[in-house]
Image (cartoon, rainbow, N blue to C red):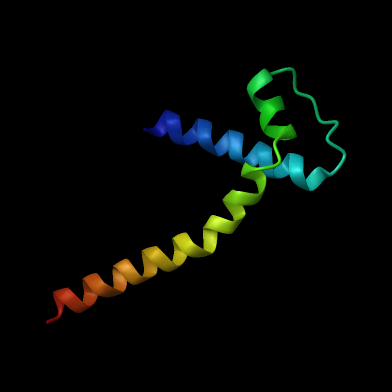
Length: 70
């Protein structure tokens, strides 16, 4: 799980960096990372998921506190 998390982190970070760079000329020589740098989908989806994930975690924690204290 840790290795999969690291790989996902690297690819998604490269995707966001590639989208923010705007030039699309970043080349690393590693085919998978170059694909992530050229990608236009995940670089926009991942930042959009962050607020929803934070809200989900918070409300899950809040409901667990309510359940524990009743």
